[in-house]
Image (cartoon, helix red, strand yellow):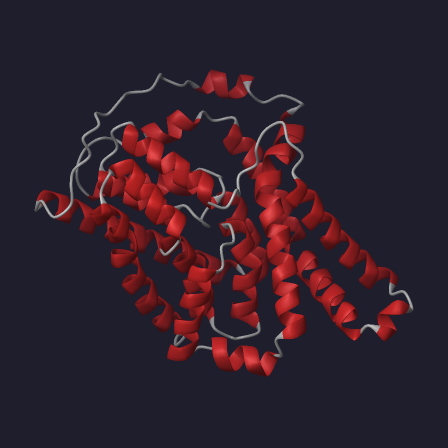
Length: 335
């Protein structure tokens, strides 16, 4: 399993290396030393990094702020929002809770498994897991910086619809005995009051927010580097041909999303490249959603937690067809 979540007490080499490489490339474009004339690829790479960073910096800053604010709310409070009743209401609440938790995709996976152990219904866990990977508040503002409000809102609404629909299908399968129900019992959490929230707002919150954001930012910087390398080595014509708004493009994007083991935060810059250079908004949506739905780490974690291969393979079985259909429609509409 890729270690996308920072381990406390250790130097985050991935963050510092990707951050350093990104800032170095940005500085090279600004300074434009003579060596750039002799290495065209380096010039194109630094220009791509410069362009991407200029588009996302304000979204990244707002993301850090959101991480800090969400971080002072106890996780159990958000988890308790799920409720315990059957039906679309509890599934929708699980979807919203998934959006509120600002964690990397594998961090979300760990929380999802904890939800199951605490007695959340399988339908709620599925909805929570499907809604969460890229839909955190911090990544949402970064996505707005890249593709604008309209497309971001469309992506959020559609991903929530997929999450709710997948949860309803899971609930139906459980009711018919086609999937095993959760044997664990629901556990209530302590009441959390607004006064406690105010007490958690301290001057050190900003520093804490930046430290907590390293987990997210390292994958964003890795995604920036990956997107810049794609621009250097894959000509626009080739990129448009193979990853454009066609059935072939959708198929290749799904394969790429399945194979490329990048944390959800790193997928945003690559999705932006699909959106802008390949002119394929559906492919961008597919890349964001498909990677999480077909990730082998999620499949294996579901199997280990639920002790059921049926549940493990239910996730891609129910989500991928929905994602493909919606992605195809997005490639053929104007927003």
